Amino acid sequence: MALFRKSREITDFQIGNKVYLRGLIEYSNVCAKDCLYCGIRKSNRKQERYSLTDEEVIACAQYAFEQHYGSIVIQAGERSDHIFTARITAILKEIKKLSQGKLGITLSLGEQTLETYQEWFEAGAHRYLLRIESSDPKLFAKIHPHDKGHSFEHRLKSLHDIRKAGFHLGTGVMIGLPFQTLEQMADDLLFLRALDVDMVGMGPYIEHQDTPLYEASDFLLTRQERLDLAFKMIAILRLMMPDINIAAATALQAIDPMGREKALKYGANIIMPNITPNVFRNQYKLYEDKPCTDESPQECTTCLEARIHMIGSKIGYDEWGDSKHFNAHQKYINN
Ligand code: 5AD
Ligand code: FES
Image (spheres, helix red, strand yellow):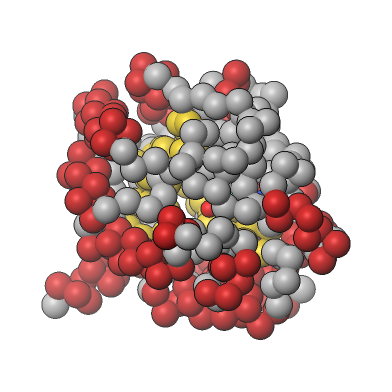
């Protein structure tokens, strides 16, 4: 397809043929929120809950460091109580220490106060992902409860606070949600550009049986159609924002075993191998058919390397692989 060829050409020209790794640590599935699409929502009583111990998180980070991953992502269900935020701060400092500052850290821990974002930034994290999920407030309202904890305006405020705290800003959307129109998806792309984000992670919506949105499954496109739309969104975004980092989301692999690799061919340049200890992987189930829940971190590493080489890309070992866009707009702001 001409679109995919063009986005490949632009990716090669702007950021090269290198893929950067972010070892994904699913720190905890305890969540204070109740998003209607998500398997780890607070009201899903069927879901057993876990949190890694500090030692376990630090061991994951050590593993990523030894494997020359360059960076990690710490992701969890959303909590903003002091016990949680202080623990994260302590863990960040510890990880920075064990890697002599060399391991890059991305956080994906939801909506927090500006003070918490600042505290985490100062403790050593430097990138933050918070998906807007849909840039259309009306669709956002259809897939979230209507209360203060799930407000579109507050999500937007958080995105601005993340940037204010100094982080590289990442956001993203789900593709193929029930009731979502092509026009809304096009608007999502315009939203990402208007916000001038540094990083994007977006993937297909995948239904989860134990969530309220499952009831709207009759309104869904086929999984293959959602996947194809996700590839197109990635390719178009690459044309629109040539120098940002785009992640090949794990949800792509839930539909197609080669979903992430295809996304890398069509313009994504980041992949997040799961390095969560095996016993917990099955419990961090945001959606059905989540891949790699039986594989160990070691198996994932070997498997991913083979897959990336198969598509003819190189891995940027020991590099942060920061978004070039961030540096470009910082220069612009500073001048
Ligand atoms: N299908 C696809 N993606 C999902 N996420 C949560 N639930 C689902 C689902 N059912 C995504 C959201 C969230 C990210 C951590 O996972 O976009 O921001
Ligand atoms: Fe996890 Fe292949 S990427 S087993």
